[in-house]
Image (cartoon, rainbow, N blue to C red; front, side, top):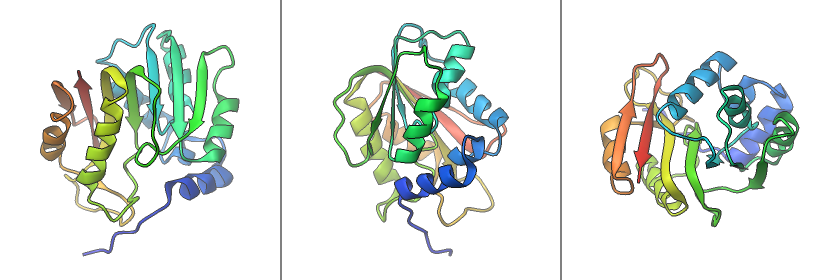
Length: 205
């Protein structure tokens, strides 16, 4: 068995900004096409128009620009990330006319008091960030997110239905994830088989 590699997400993504700049590779994706597919899946079941949106692990703020391009005119976009470099670049990347605000926060460790209608998370839990179990970290994430969302949450995770797992990645079993998510959200749906090694979870209050 390969030994898990624990990473500091703030340092990891600060370095990626330095290495890749404004690109899909900075946030860990192979292409903007794959990123758009993720956003399509994450947002397709949610009515985000005129809503406040918390983007957890917002990276470069690409979700805000995606929603604008999709004519989903939100009330407020709140981006949080652990990487100072990401946040600095996000403020430059996001269209200036959009109602956005950014905070340096680690939702797994820091308190968050900003309420929102919906929260969206893409890729935040892909990295091994702790010696705690992956499901344990997911439970912390769900607990803290549920405390601030009024309508729902959409997030994606790497699936364990793969032949190879990199030592710094955390992979999840969809059935186990459904069970944990149902502790916090009444309506839970899981979306798989969209061509990437992951799955998306929608939880509605």
